Amino acid sequence: MDLGKLATEKRNEQTMELDTLSTEELLRLMNQEDQTVAKAVSLEIPQITKVADAIIQSFNQEGRLIYMGAGTSGRLGVLDAAECVPTFSVDPSMVQGLIAGGMKAMTLAVEGAEDSKELGAQDLAAIELTKKDMVIGIAASGRTPYVIGGLEYAGKVGAMTATISCNKAAEISAFAQLPIEVEVGPEILTGSTRLKSGTAQKLVLNMLSTAAMVGIGKVYQNLMVDVKPSNKKLEERAKRIIMDATECSYEVASEMFEAADHQVKLAIVMILTNSSQAEAREKLTAAKGFIRRTIA
Image (cartoon, rainbow, N blue to C red; front, side):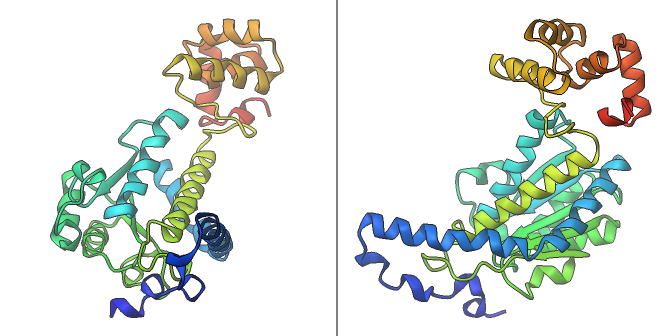
């Protein structure tokens, strides 16, 4: 596809005089454009729903979620994957982000990496992709060879595939079972897809990972009951979560937090069902990790 025909590469008629604006005028115009992003994402919710459900299905069969992209798109995938570990106490291998050129590309551009279809396939082969896994290719332009190569490989393996792009009829969509196309239109700075396109991708990634984790029991009410309390701040947050979930005192929450070996979800079930740690663990196992099912 001719790059100039992509919506993400066109000039924005509203920002043609960008270099003549005052700082405040520029920021107000930028904010005005940004407000269109959430609306564009909302139009894709039916498709985003299908992708989230597919991720849940993958997790339920002990599969993994693999994001892959280049540049900003790759970095956003790596970021979302990394945040799943402390937020939901998942193993780092469960949600992974692959970026063209490897982790050094998180801070420095790696010349030519995104242009290699072979590299995309190699990176998935290196993590031993299986048909239980789900691969989501991310590319604002919707035409990144690295992503296409990965999707082709995933298809051969039999893994479920999805994409997130910011152009309609994106090239990568043809290589995925569940394509998401959020058309945000031209950027205020022509071709700078770290802006509206990046925001759209981040919003979609937030939706996918959060909905998927809710879908496998990592949330009770609207609380992060599987949070990993890896520092003092998170330990205090963990106790507050226990208090909110059970309406107990800070003292009780602290005591049960210790009794549950710092496992928030376990402490909550111990309190709500008046159970020992062993009994609560058994109840959670029977309920497949869903707190609500232990008290039904």
